Image (tube, rainbow, N blue to C red; front, side, top):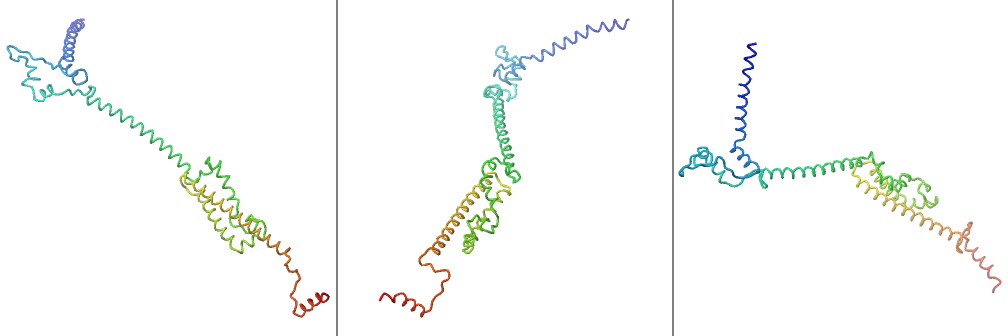
Length: 276
């Protein structure tokens, strides 16, 4: 019981000590000089140079002021008090400039990230069309070039007769083969088919691949036009030759053999003997 009474008697002393310490602590945290320094360090105001000076008969009597801002203060303190406004958070302060610069850098970083993301996505899309493994899935190939270049794959690599060359008859084929025209056309066909195979099997940018498609298509059209021209021209010449051979008044009989001089004279005499 006595121990309990002693403990209860110590409670008021503890409360009093806490209160006194609390008052002392609050007083230290709310020191006017520190508050004024905080205002100068942020953005509120430049000034309020606490502690203030006190004079007695023109003599400085405030020891705190003399040692902080007065004649006994360090030179850097006096230079700071008499210098320009260097608040870091003022409208044109260094810290606000840093904040503005950080904000600007954040915006630039967002732009760079958006650009890099766009480049990355574009690179992925381009890579999908770069490899020859995906050429059959390209929309432009499916919509146009697959149909326009199909005759190249259907045309034989090395035609051997007039049917494979798409000529009108065997005589035209033999004539073109004899004159060497088919050999030259075969060389052009080989170049067209080689370029077509390269455009389908090599890895290259999508734009370059379609340029090769287009160039191959133009070469194929010229090849077909030239082949048709030789076919029509040769067939026409052969038809004229046959017409002249069969219907000319100067055409020789099928079983004609040259006569001797004696026979020629005898025939002539028989033809004109009753006219003179």
